[in-house]
Structures are given as C-alpha cells and as structure tokens.
Length: 242
Image 1: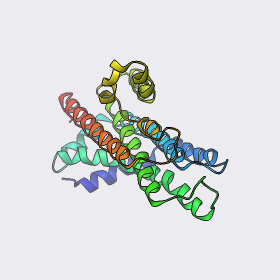
Image 2: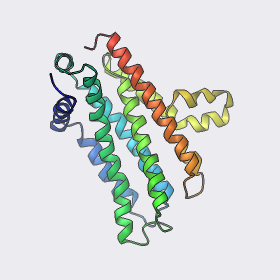
Image 3: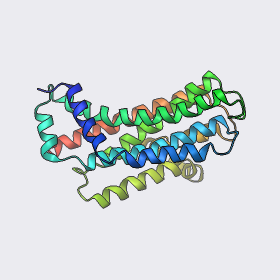
Image 4: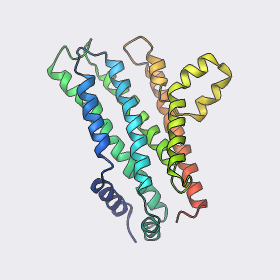
C-alpha cells in the first residue's frame, strides 16, 4: 500500500516531467515583466491583478493535469492507496501545491523588489498589505483549481465541451459583479460562482484592503472550493472512477 506522500510524490513527478507547467511559467514571467515595467504601481491593484492571473493559470493547470490522467494508471494508484481516501487527498495536494508555488512567486516578487526600490509602489508597503494581498491572491488560485478540476474528463468526456464549459463559467465569474449590479435578482450567482472579482469590488478606486471584507472573501472561497471538491469526488466515485 502506498502512503499519501508516496502517491503525492509519484503524481507530482508525472506532472513535472510533462509540459503542463511550461505555459503557466511563461505566463507568470511575462506578467511580472509587463506588470512592473511602469513604476510606481498601486499596491492593491498589483495584488488583485496577480490574483486574477493566478485564477486563470490555476484553471489551466488543473484542467491540463486531469485531462492527461490515464484511467488504468489512476485506477492502480487508487487500488494501492492506503487508505483509499489517501488517493483523493494526494491528488488534490498536487494541484494545490503547484498553485501555491506560483502564488508565492507572484506575491514575493514585488515584495522583494520593493524592498530595494522605494519608488516601486505609490506608497510604502506595509505588513497588512502583504497579509491581505497574499490572501486575495491565493484564494483566487484555490477557486481556479477547484473550477478547472470539476470539469473532469470522466464527467464530461468530450474535451471541447469541457473547455467551453469552464471558459463560460470563468467568464461569468469575471462578469458576476457587473451582472448583479444591473440585474439584482441574479444575486444567486454569488453562490454559484467563485468570488474572483470580489476583491476588485471591495477595493474600488482606493489602494487599501478592508480586513473584514478580505476575510469574508477568504471564507467564501474556501467554502466554495470545499463544496466543489466534495461534489466532484462524489460524482467521480459514482462514475466508477476507481
């Protein structure tokens, strides 16, 4: 029986040896180069844009990984996992740890560079900015992973339909705030879609984070991801995914 760590290590090596991470890596490098080519930057918008990018690449990463899963190989891993739930935990750990890695780069790069350049941001960077900004970046990544993985190839066999579905939901999540403002009866979208743009709405035209608002977005994102993960695993088990 393989432990959770062994399963995690094996699945992570498969991802690293594939070309899945090439596009996200290029996207992050290009984003950092373009984003900070003009200084000074506003602190809030810097973190919020980084969070949006992390959402997009997290959707791409989770979809790419699950699209490359082979039924026989995954079935054997599940069969040899101890306990059986360890397979699902290791599987989630792979995508979320990759997301966290890119999120860490997006957060640390401006923080480190600004410590050597006083004119990097329009105002001095404070510890609260880093804390709440990091939360908003990472929760977008959490939602991105959950969203991309729920359109699993075992649930939606045709790749085209899965891609169309995830793009449609992602676009609705981006436009959710504007839709609700114009059509108040569509508030149900707050429960059906991830809070990708809620941080932008919270900050508005300002350049500071609201602690209470940030924590509410954190809670919303974690609950949303948890529900999506549970539904996904339940459906995959029903489809005899192991």
